Image 1: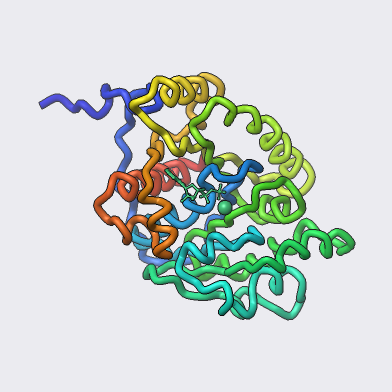
Image 2: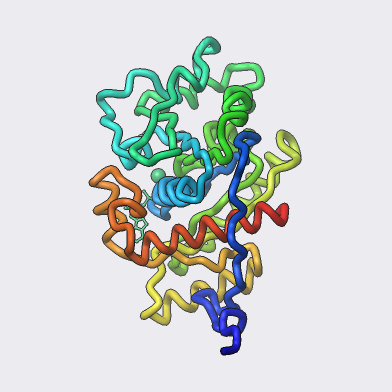
Length: 287
Ligand code: ADP
Ligand code: MG
């Protein structure tokens, strides 16, 4: 049998690469810190943070999720009761005595913890403005956590304000989820401008890991055209993995579980497992 993997066209219109088996880890620490970023809401940032995190945990990675959106959807999405959160990323950013260890909370997923958020975080953005080194606060607070985890995923709010700048300053790289719709491309230039500015002024190592097409519907010409436009503009920065549109994601959020547990054998779960492998391969290549 010929190896069809390398000639079969994937949903992005490119031949699907053969992704190597992820290397098992024997030691932990020195986490890669990754921001999930797009100033548009409803594009799959939170869903990607939870499910990429859970898929990496399935692969034996120690994962820390950081909720940096005052809406707190990530915290709810991993099953936390918002009324039960006493200390949160607000305290982490605002109180110099609070460390990540004071707010870290286990999730129902083995190997995956979360730093939860509550609505107070909205105030942090304003209060931080007058701080010295206001862009570096999260970076300083996470530098300790990096020794305890393999991956830290930061779920950003839908804006390019100071909280997002803190996330980008703390990060090694950025993943940009994009809804597979015509207007999705419009905001990307503004986002990459911001990333570029943070790289120049605050964090020279910052790179874009990739753009991720979400809410893809392969039955429509529309979705396929948007993917091909995205690949024309961004080439191999676009992940081969795409996330299809399915209601299972909202059902999983309501249940407070990653889709990899809520519907473990669904195509949505498989897509995020594939993304985890693709992401690990890019990190290994030093993308
Ligand atoms: P963001 O964090 O960018 O605002 P979310 O991850 O919260 O976006 O997703 C917005 C809504 O869309 C949520 O209700 C989520 O459950 C749903 N959703 C996310 N990804 C998909 C998908 N691939 N198919 C269908 N619905 C999705
Ligand atoms: Mg969100």
